[in-house]
Image (cartoon, rainbow, N blue to C red; front, top):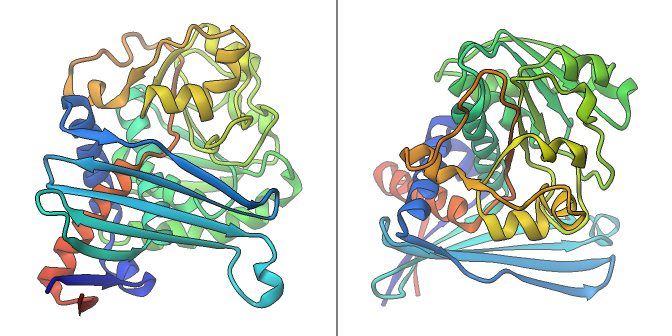
Length: 336
C-alpha cells in the first residue's frame, strides 16, 4: 500500500511563505535550464465553450525526483449554485516509481508561485538602482506579486497600484491590497510606501519596474510611455489572444521568458510575434539565473519577462510543501 499526503488550502497557507515560493520557482527554472526537467504537452478541453472548460499542465523535475500535474477547471455557472467558478488541484508523484505522494489544493500554490515568478524576473532583469514599482492590475495576484518583488528587491521605496481598465477603482483596490502585502511579508522583510495611481501613463513613465497581471486582450502599456532602463514582468497573458503590452515595445526591448514555445503560443510574446513585430528570440530566465545567458547589459535596456506560468513551478512548490508538511506533521496522510 502507498501513503499519500493531502494538503488543503488552510494547511498550505499555514506552510507556504514568499521565501519558500521564490526558492522553489528559481529551482524549477534552473532545473529546466540544465536539462533536468521537462514540460509535457498542455491539455485544454471545453465542456461547453465559453461556459465550462479545463486545462492540464504537467511535467517532471529530475533533480527533485518528482513529476506532477495541475488541473484547473472553470465552470462559469457555479457561483449561481453557491460553488466556486474555479477549482485547482495538484498531484505529485515519485519519478522513480510512479507512486502518488501528494494531493494539494492548487489555488494558494498558484498565487504564491506566480508572484514569485514575476518577482524573479525583476530580480535578474531590473536595474540594481530601481526604486519605483508599478503594479498594473488589482486582482488576486497583485498582493503576491508586490510582496515577492519587495522581498527580492528591498531597494524599492515606492509602489504604485493601478487598475488600468477602471482607474477610478485604484484607490479602493490599493487600500485592500496593502494589508495583504504586509501580511505576506511578515517575518521575511521588505517594505515600501504603497499608493494608488489613477493616472496610468504618469505611473508608467515614473516606474523602474512594472508588473502586469490582468486578463487584457488589448494592450494598455503604451510603448511611448516606457522609459529607457525599465523592466516589465508580464503575468496576465496565459492563453492565445491575451496582451497587456504594446507590440511596438518588442521591436527594441530585450525579451526573456519562462518557456519559449509557450511564450510564443499563449504568452505576451504571441501577438507581436505573429504580427512580425518581434523576431521570436527569447532568452529563458533559467539561463540568466545560471549565468549561461546574459540578462540586462546596459542601464538603458528595456527588458520584458514573459511569465506564462509553467508546470515546473507548481511541481517544485508542491515538493517544498510536501517536505514542510512531513517536518511539521501538517496535512493528512491517506493510505491508497
